[in-house]
Length: 259
Image (cartoon, rainbow, N blue to C red; front, top):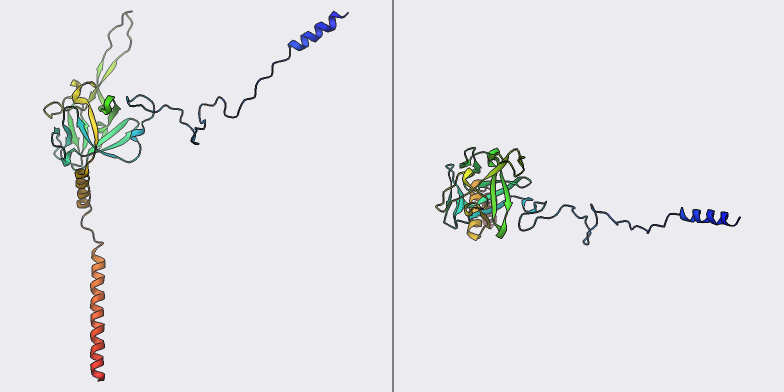
């Protein structure tokens, strides 16, 4: 008679669930978790110096004005005639570029003084286009030591993948990208002959110097034309001076007649 109540008591104690510890309001949150500074954290990882990560912070905002210095010691130039080459001159106006983001990791490169866009056709040749088109889009990637590569977005080489060791194909096809490249003589290379590891395909975006900024300001003033603003104050000032002189002369003549 005593064992039956004990068994019922033990069974009731075993069915009680353990008490879970209290959970803080922000515990276990990954997206939108507050940072130490206050705003919500971005769940995506930031890009590091090697170009790995998820966010292209260097492509945001206004267009960047840079000079693309190749590892072969040439500055990329876009000519008004449609020609593209490299120059050893450090402060040349045709080497000043305007880099604009058109998509995530995709940029358009325009020569400020030539007014043309850098482009690559389906034969791998670089040329300067008067208008922006799909051949003017380049994939920008950051590599070691701060160098960048610019690969054509729409033109590449299709390479069928060879069978693997097990006999099965790893991929149906593989793409080899075509890069903007300037050789040791300052001439552009064909896209299908380039590699991302080639010295001629590595470019260092250089910030403009004082001489470059002065040339850009002069170009902008020439494009805007002569300003009409300064003429109005001088013109008004001349009229005011003439009116004062007439008024003074009239007063003098009036005084003479009274005497």
